[in-house]
Image 1 (cartoon, rainbow, N blue to C red):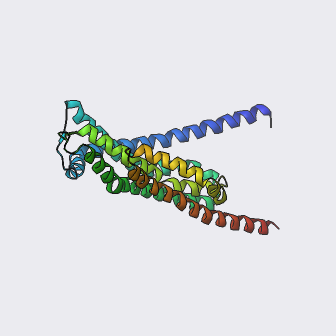
Image 2 (cartoon, rainbow, N blue to C red):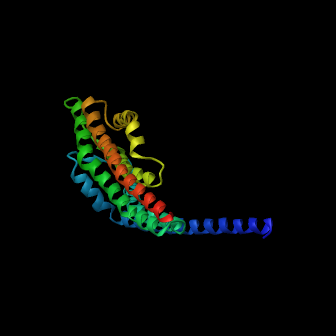
Image 3 (cartoon, rainbow, N blue to C red):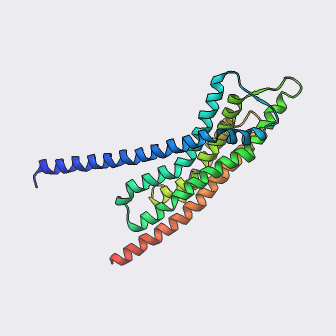
Length: 251
């Protein structure tokens, strides 16, 4: 086969892959739009749920604030609802390059990604957000006439809850990287003190300037890191068994 025909085949393969990737991203975008419209339709019910947990009346300062809350809440619904579809499309794209065993294992990550994302949102909203919110209110008690705008409150809500939705994915990411042989539990233990330092800094950035609250926020992140080490050890042992089995079968 000539060098020119080989180059042409490679270009065709790249073009086919790019075409498939574009199709899968397009389907993901369609699902995102569908969930966005669904969230837009039910914005009032979603808003009333969150607003019912606030003891203060939320205020809008202009008509664009109303539009902003519609877009923001609909976007959060769309992001959450599209996440499993996006991960499925990514899996379908890389599926031909995986072995049957790798396909089965990687497919199980899809519902886990969604559940951990939702679990992180719930943890941030029900556990962390009330602590930070009450602490901030206590700072101004008796000093100010407390009034919240819709935009400020929901920006605060997203800032507190969304990072935990992302952090809750850490154990799954570590498991995946361990299965690829990129990280291992020994490496994670060796870098533990540096990881703790980074997590404490992240906790400081998320929480207000109060030492107790910063520790409260950092503790779940440290626990997630320790859980990641345990899960990495389980995956590593399974990976080593499979490698030993493959070696013995080759012999």
